[in-house]
Length: 377
Image (cartoon, rainbow, N blue to C red; front, side, top):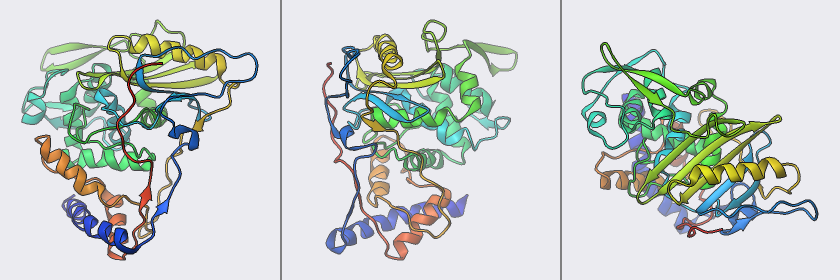
C-alpha cells in the first residue's frame, strides 16, 4: 500500500512537467466527444421519427439523459456533457469503485472525519466498528455521508479511496468527472455530467449486490450493540413506478436536485439521469422521461451511445492520460479542507508513471470544461 501511495505521489509530481513538454512541442491527439458528435449539443437533443412520434416532456432541469442500458443507445438528452455538481448521485461512482474490491464481511473502525460529517448520516460512532456490507446499505438506501467516508477509508485511506473513484471514472470513460469527496458533498473543482452519471448507472447494473440493496424498502443498521436503526429507501419510485428497480437522489443548495433512475419493462432496461433540477420534482420528471423512453425505445434514432468501459491494459503499456489532472485535483481537495488526493490508483499509477518516465504523453482533448445550461425544456 505504501509503495502504491508513493507511485501515486510521483505520478502527480511529474505530470505538470510532462504536460508542459506536450504543450511545447508534441502534437495533441484530438478525440471526438465521448458518446458521439450529437452529444456535444447544449440544448435538447432528440431524433424524432417521421411518424408515430411522442414529444419529450418539458423537464425543469439543466441537464438530463435517457438511455437503453442494454444497447447503450442514448435516446434523448439535454446538455449531456455539461459540468454540474453531483451531490449524492456521486455515491454511485463510490459504489462502482469500491463494492467490487471491499470484503463485505470486513469491519471498519469509524474515524473522527466520518463521525462528524453532516448532514444525511446514519450516525456512525467514532471508534466503533461497522461491517462493509452494512455501510453500503446505509450509503445506498439513506445516502449516508458518514458511510461514504468510512468506505473510502476502508480502501486503505481516504486518499486512496477517492483516487480509486477517479481511476474508475477514467476506466468508464467518464471524462467529465472529477471526484473530490466520496459522498458527493460540494467541493471546489468537483463535477460530473448527466452523461457520466449514466455510465456510472450502467456499470452499477453489473453488480448483483448493488441491485439487491436497491430493491430493499427498509433494512436494519446495527448502530451499536443491541441498538439497530431502520434504513428506509429514499427512492419513492420503488413500488410506485411500474418496473422501477433502483434510484439515487441527491441534493445540495448549489447542486439543486440530482437523480439517477433505473427501470425495466418488457425486457428493456432504461437509465435516466437529471442534474440541477427543481428540488422535489426530480422523481416526478424522471418518471416522465422513463415513460417517454419506454414508448419511444426502438422508434427514435439514437442521438449517441454510452461508452463501454476501457479494457484492462497490460503492465507497461502506455495509456492516454490528462497529465494536469492529478495536481489540479490535489489543489481542489486541499481547498475543500481535506488532504491532497492522487487521481490514479494501484496499477493505474504504475502505468501513468511508466508512460511519463518514457516521455510518452498523449494529450486527450475533450470538449472544453464548461458550466451547464440553465433549467428549462
